[in-house]
Amino acid sequence: MAQLAHARTALLDVAYEDSGPSDALPVVLLHGYPYDARAFDEVVPIINGAGYRTIVPYLRGYGATRFLLPDTPRSGEQAALGQDLLDLLDVLQVRHAVLAGFDWGGRAACVVAAIWPERVGGLVTCTGYQIQDVAQSKKPVDPEQERRFWYQYYFQTERGRRGLTEMRGELGRLLWNLWSPTWTFGDRTYNRTAVSFGNPDFVEVVIHSYRHRMGNAAGDPRYAALEARLSMLPKIGVPTIVIHGSVDDVNPAQKSEGHFRYFTGHYERRVFENVGHNPPQEAPKAFAEAILDLCERQ
Image (cartoon, rainbow, N blue to C red; front, top):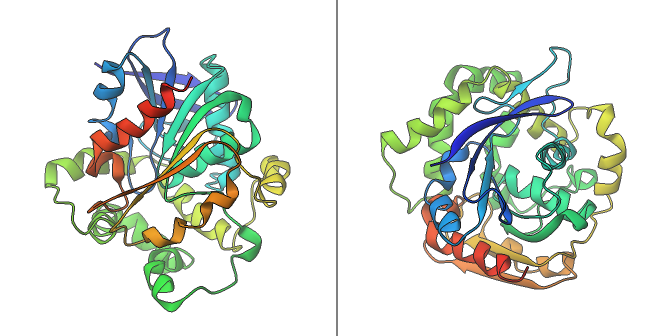
């Protein structure tokens, strides 16, 4: 059984679930917005059953993860997420791990794989290369994709901040339905995740994440050097499997077809049929299989 544990980094008290053999190769599983550690409930037993350890953290602003100080900026920028992941690996004395994530979690994993590749044995990233080109964020894309980003534009406004504050549960459920149109889930499944949105920093972290990526909010100065490196869109050289759901309605599968150009090591792209934006919960066996394929390369 996974045990809820806490790790104290320079900025955070990170809540995470730890299971499997403590001396085995660690697999770090990373969720995004609006999800939490429950996305991996059916993945973890498969990975543990194959003999590997799993570490499933709650990202900043989610679940029981807390900032240590009230004056720390509640940044949701990509550099913050990547640095949080590296800091967690350091505190847990994990020198080498396989990273697997989707949405924000895939982005954090891509950041660490690109900047600190010596810490990563393999990478599973959903929807491809996830490092954001913030400098190009003002450039419009095709109208159909702009429609899919409606929630990001909503969060640029104070009305959106208030909407997220007052209706975070309803909004999250709407996004689950839109982004994974073929996935049937019940109240119990959703509510087990939505409890994590009660974190006192949830709204500030989410709003900052979407405003920063569109150039409408300044970053935390502590991450300026790392953001500068990410602005160069560094290539990733660790063994990688990209997963993309064929019916993902926020990042359609064709969007990652050319992402091989961002990877210089072993690379494979797998399209999961009839799966949307949340592959670990919609297709846990196939998601776990991708992870195990990378674990066996170690």
